[in-house]
Image 1 (spheres, rainbow, N blue to C red):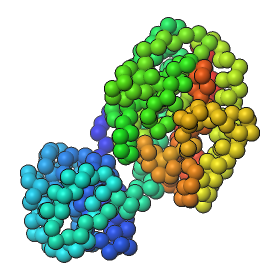
Image 2 (image 1 turned 135 degrees about the vertical axis):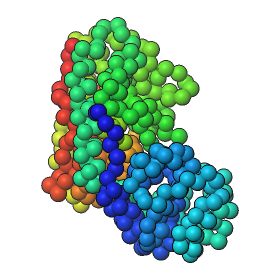
Image 3 (image 1 turned 60 degrees about the vertical axis):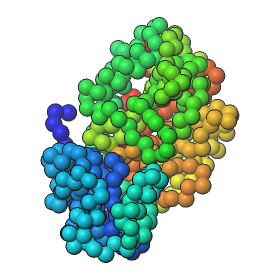
Image 4 (image 1 turned 90 degrees about the horizontal axis):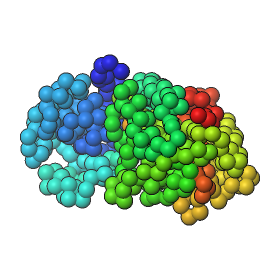
Length: 398
């Protein structure tokens, strides 16, 4: 990556129109967008500010900091340098949008005290939740977005090729993690993997070896890891030394130009234990069947239910997607500007797959002697799931 990429004006205009169509269905007069991810998606900038989207007409971008960067990054025409949030209502009214009886805010994300503040600013408006409409617009990726995601996938693929040169007997997990992360950073990793879910903080990814792969954590994923501390991010690579003949599990995101690839590969110094080798073969078999099953109009829960059936048939039900009570109840998740987007391939999720959806499939097993499995990023096409991550999926012995 050698230059900054700015979201094209045509892309922003298309997203705004789609949001306005969603707003019209619920008769919203306007919406205020402030969350960084949504703000970037709809304006092309992540600078601190508020985007007003009317039910009809042109949006208004009001920036607190940094106004010069927002002017450079966003193709929106109406951009204001707004030092006081209390002036938002005045700016919107001066642009001719005086009727805001029903105003949308991202109520799935905004803290309660902020909500009270907005109620004061827009005291004559009924505040409603716009988050469902924004999620609906973001759900189906454009060709432009899929191209960016594909490039992120190619970056992490390249780094996985370099892993055999990184690994040595007796090195710590965190040392391997630092080398892997450096490989992504110098190729353009933006340094932040965003999640929407409350308190689901996340770093770059996860390296575990041997029994550390069985260490559970609060994070809503199948594999935990001890991490470096019980404080922040108490999961992932720790101080454990990597030894011969134990599984090395590497599961990382790769966020380039905002879009999140997700991929897992398995390594070993020497030879895998027989049970883990068999479980990995079963993970590949599950991935193959789920990929074949994933077609437009198929319900998300059908993918998950079939995965559970296959794991049980292989005799690994109690180790699938975690171990014991720490198992998670999904087999895949949407990826895009955030790691936990829709579609969620989980029990009870009746959303149907559609072309343009992008997601990760991750059949994995956890045993006392370690974690093992596969994960790849896909895009749903008219003909089915197309894989975007292409690093060799064979266990690599070094």
